[in-house]
Length: 316
Image 1 (spheres, one colour):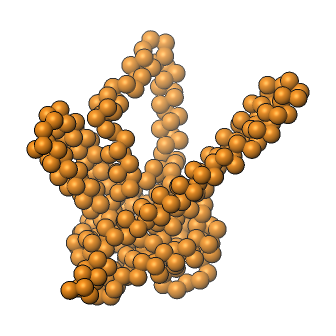
Image 2 (cartoon, one colour):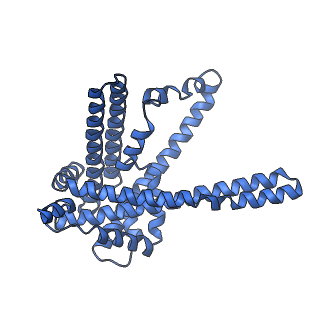
Image 3 (cartoon, helix red, strand yellow):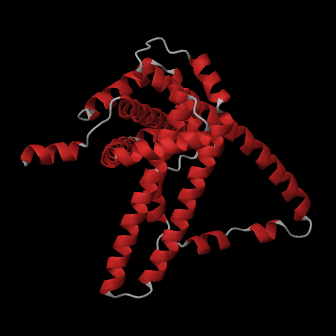
């Protein structure tokens, strides 16, 4: 096995994102899947705290009022339209992520000329397996998040030292299981695209690869989490720039006495904000998938040792 070179993985991934602007589009489109991964699991665990349990969240949804009386007809039409749009978005997002994985794998193999059409064809070719993989991964993560949330709420109802330690142990186990599910999903997608393996064989190989690289998977997950937090922090600090159209149009509206101008400025600021957020999210998504695929290929073909274990071995 070789020592991990996370710096090289991050640098190669940045070079890919910088080299091919088409990867940006794939990153934004694949983001429509609503990436439920390890980082999102952590965020979901924080959001659904004791004050906001899953039961309270779902019971508060206004479904009963929508499906009552004269609202039934329009609600059914709305449901049909939403299902059709959701199906279109899912197909587009799954194929885009498959194409993004194909691009990252080809970049790792040394191909400098990115063939987006070929990558898109590979994503479409393996759509059903990728969709089944995403569905299984998201289902397991959601069930894990729901179960862990109920367990935490139950333990917090008994405020004593033992329940505190049990909560810490439950969260630790839950985070590890979430890491395992998300990482196996990433590796299995790599095996489906790169090796064109059948669904169950890809999962089996992905589980084996994860078991051989548990610490490496944890290390790269933490590194990418820090990178994402840093970029999000920079984005938050720069949000004041998106208020410039609103401020300018507000001043203009004050001189003219027109509220429409102020509303236009507000809409422009919102459009700029959401467009920038989508672009940043797509870039981070493309960057993360590229880094994972680089390390996946390294693990699959060469094997990687944990950086922490290397440091402990050197100190020992």
